[in-house]
Length: 346
Image (tube, rainbow, N blue to C red; front, side, top):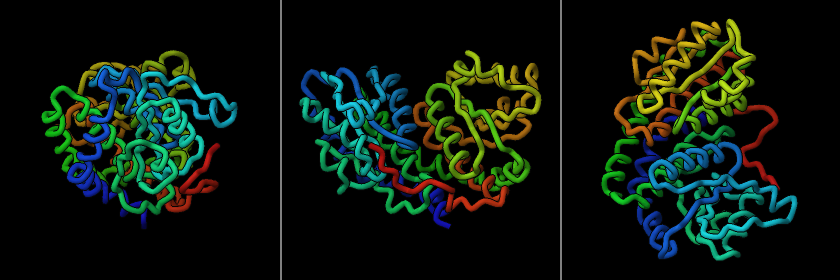
């Protein structure tokens, strides 16, 4: 099955990126204006949009750059190109074919902004319009649901952040830990499969993650919809408290990604409250035993990665769980209904 193969290719893809991709990243950064870039605008759709959300946190927290997610329809539907003064304009797309994402990068280039494509298709329309291309080097991805191209997009964003860092060698050393962490995450396949078998009747869920892991929550929820036909809604716990928590009650399903880091204490309090005061059922993914103990079910995350890199490994057990859940439901994760590998939006 291609989806299983592609999930297990992720350590090799990350190693290949880190071995072969630095020259392109450094060349791109060296070309930025002498005064530096003031902010970043990113155009993306679907899974790639979650890589863009990861970039909001990484480039914001590590490089102090405000990151805006473009609304491509402003250009493609309304014919208006926003002013991108002082911005780095980035398109993220595994196929590089979506016309509305291409239009945003093209508009940035026409305005004289530096432009960057992050794609698995260096010969694509997106790559052809951008000043610089970060090739994901993931190889062909045949499964409809993106797995290895998502983690490789995160690696590319992290490499860009490292190259913009005042101490790039230290950040690069931290990045070298990622492939081994993904390998450790893959060791949870058996546990993920067992939990999925118990939850085969699940039809809807809330998925929560905070900070860097908000991107993981969104990507996990999307995969649950695509592959396992679970109506899954992602939230930051802060946003969950601003109203949506009202729909939860005894027996409601909450999936949480909660690794160690600055958000761990708050996640502990929130999840304990959902379990003890609301009565929700919890599946907790964490490297911290105390957090996993809050869940009726739990899956271990690999420990040791810096918090800014943890999402690259954290999504992997979620991928394993979701594919196993689809099969437990009698579904074919290779052929989700109504969707195709490449979606051309305009």
